[in-house]
Length: 276
Image (cartoon, rainbow, N blue to C red):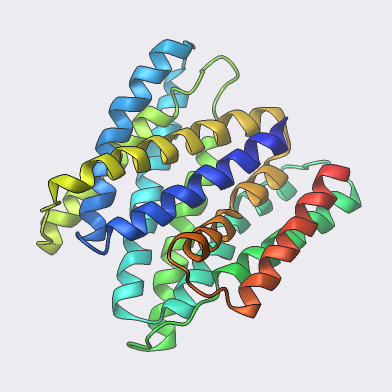
């Protein structure tokens, strides 16, 4: 059940990432992300009340930490894309972020079979391969590495924090993450004097992005209660493969051989994890 939920996370997050990137062609990426966080907060609170649950104060604090990590991580990644080399920022952020919960799980004594650990390692390799992209080179490689590392740390905190929800908390941990992320993004928009303008026609897409990303976060939190953090985090973090496939299906973008290899490795990794 945990791996099935993790695959749902990858699917929803991948489609959300694709739609968010598509929307960012017509409006500032930070503004799109902030609007999605705001909508996500409203949707998550409504769904959390419907599902029920009794969150502890720790659940809410972990949720707030997840939101800050997400906002800081995404801000660093977007800035890195704009000011440095995408081909360095993306894979560093992708592999680095999933390494945080994997290392935590290993230190915490996560009892996995050797086959499952091989699947985890292959999953990390798949994330690296799928994330590799061509990118206009701006600034130094060291600058790109810095932005990617900050992005990895922020998103790694998100993945780790969501795994800390208690069994009876429902999906309440997601609500404060949407709110704290929104606050951070609004501060970034203010400090960078970025335009907040979003075309009205884009709002249905933004609501869909919010629904998908919030649902992905909720499914991830539930999945980590039912299975190994290392396997769930790796499978869920394979969402770039879905984003690449969406770009191929909708925009007719060519899938690079290295990305296709990553998709194949991802399927092999999932197979090993499921069979373990």
